[in-house]
Amino acid sequence: MARTAAERLQHEASQGSCAHAVRQEEKAARALAQAEAICRAHGVRLTPIRRKVLETLYTTHKPLGAYDLAEALEPGGRRIAPITVYRALDFLIEQGLAHRLASQNAYIATFQGDSSHEATAFLICEECGGVDEVTSSALTETMANLLNAEGFRAHTKVLEVTGRCAHCQDAH
Amino acid sequence: MARTAAERLQHEASQGSCAHAVRQEEKAARALAQAEAICRAHGVRLTPIRRKVLETLYTTHKPLGAYDLAEALEPGGRRIAPITVYRALDFLIEQGLAHRLASQNAYIATFQGDSSHEATAFLICEECGGVDEVTSSALTETMANLLNAEGFRAHTKVLEVTGRCAHCQDAH
DNA sequence: CTCGCAAAAGTTATTTCATTGCAAAAACCT
DNA sequence: AGGTTTTTGCAATGAAATAACTTTTGCGAG
Ligand SMILES: [Zn+2]
Ligand SMILES: [Zn+2]
Ligand SMILES: [Zn+2]
Ligand SMILES: [Zn+2]
Image 1 (cartoon, rainbow over the protein chains, first blue to last red):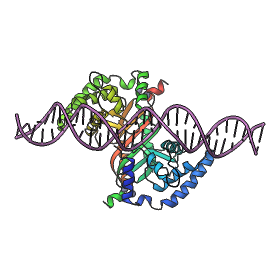
Image 2 (image 1 turned 180 degrees about the horizontal axis):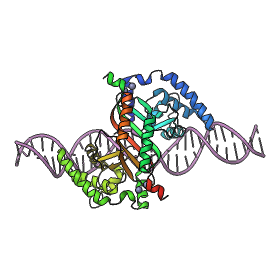
Image 3 (image 1 turned 135 degrees about the horizontal axis):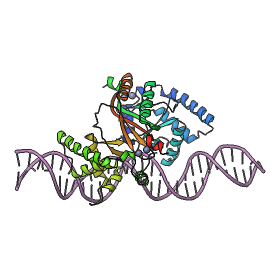
Image 4 (image 1 turned 45 degrees about the horizontal axis):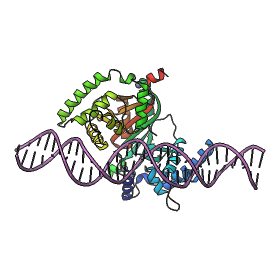
C-alpha cells in the first residue's frame, strides 16, 4: 500500500530539490501571508503551531505524514505530540489551507483556494514525491454529471492519481 | 477522518439490509463463479481463505476493514490473523476482484471486471454504507485528457466520493 | 487589573490499520 | 516419493489516528 512516512522522507532526501520545489520559498511566503489574511477574515486564529505546520507543508511541497511533521517541527523546541499535529491539520483542512491525501496517509498544503464545489485532482509522482493540484472545468462538469445521473449528493471528493510526472519521465 | 471498522459494522447492523444489498446473494453466487473462472484463466489459485474473503465482500457489499473480515471469517474455525486477511486481499486486488477504498481504510469486492485503463469512481454513502461503482466513457476521457495535458503517466487512480446515495436522500 | 470563560496545547494511553520475519503446512511438478 | 514453490500460521512490531483528561493561554466583561 502507500509508502510510509519514513520512506517518504528518505526518498525526498535522496532526490534533493526537484522541479516541483523550485522557487517554493517565495511562493510559500506569499501563500503564508494569504493564509493569515484568510484566517483573519474567518475570525479564527493561525497560532504559532498551526502556522509552523502550514509553513512546513508549503516549503516542502511534498506530502508529509503527521509524524513527519512532528519531527520536522522538533528542532528548537520540544517534541510535539502527534495529537497536536493532527489538531493543527484538522484546523488547516477546515480552513481549506491543507489537504489530506487519503491514498498516502499524508498531508499537503493547498495553493489554490479550495473552491469547494470544484473537483480537484491531485497528481502524485511516485518518483520525486511531488504533487500537482489540477482542476479543469471539464473535470468538474464530468463529475457533476456523473453524480447527478446517479442521484448521489457528494460531500467529499477524493481524486488522487499516482504515477510519474512529466519531468521525471524526461529524466528517466 | 474515516469511520472506523467497528462503527461501520454497527452502522450496518443498525440499518439492516438496504437497497444496495438487495438480491445480493444471487449476484454474489454468480460473481463468485466468475471469479473462479478468472483465476483458472490466470493460472492462479482461489484458495478457501481467499474465496471466503471474496464471498464475504460480495455478500456484504459494503466496505469492510481487514479486521472486520478477520472477525467475519471466524465462526466455524479459529481466528484468522490479520496478516492472512491482508494477504488474501492483496491477491484479490491483484486479480482485479477486490478494491481498496483508500479514504475508508476498507475493502470491497469489484463487480465489474476491472478493465484497468478505465476510470472507475466509487460512490460511498455515509448513511447506509453502500458503495456504487460507476464508470463512464466521459469520465475516462476527461481523466485521460487531464493527465495528458499535464504530461502525467498514471499508475493508479483513486476516485472516491463520499456523500448520500439516491435512496438515502428519498428516505431522509 | 482580575475574574471567568472558551479555545488551544500538553500529557498519557489506547485503538486501529498494516507489515516483518520466520516456521509449518499444503499444493504442485517431476 | 523427493524436491520445489506457494500458501498459511504465528508472534511481534511498526505506523497512523484517536481518546480522555489536565494545564495553559488568549481575551473580553466587570
Ligand atoms: Zn518533481
Ligand atoms: Zn516526478
Ligand atoms: Zn443503500
Ligand atoms: Zn445510502
